[in-house]
Length: 193
Figure 1 (tube, helix red, strand yellow):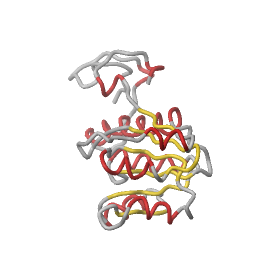
Figure 2 (spheres, helix red, strand yellow):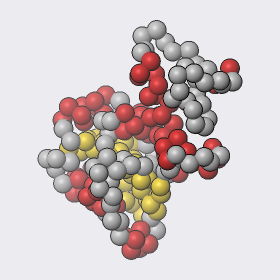
Figure 3 (cartoon, helix red, strand yellow):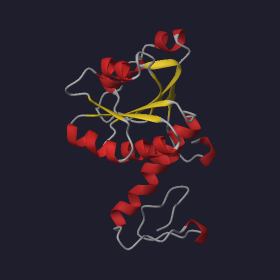
Figure 4 (tube, one colour):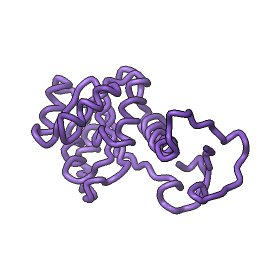
């Protein structure tokens, strides 16, 4: 398998530099192998470059049982964060716990904001990885600790959130977007991602 920096990686044939090639382990099929660079690169860029997640901080992952969500849970834990997973079922939360989440919130059965604030003793979270959008985005903005960062990376709910900028301003928080050439069709240098 090869990792392509720009467009053309989904073609049947493509010319790449040897340094971009990675051997796929025998027990990993091509479909799963192809998903790994996308999920993990998105999580790495969001957590490290955009969110500047630091060891000891609290990370809330919305959609924690999806491919990108699980990658984010794993990487957040590896970076030393206390990870709170949010998903829509006990089975999904169990999967996130197996990947390193310290806590889980079932947003179908619990009030997301109230439960997160309870888990953090009222302090809130430092970083939110938000691939869900919609009402969940609006709720978790109220879960950010002072100086917190909400990383908007997708809208799986199908609804673009209407975030209240005054909440960001008053608590010295940030809402950061993660957009790159691999997902928006624009041709840009990798440094812009």
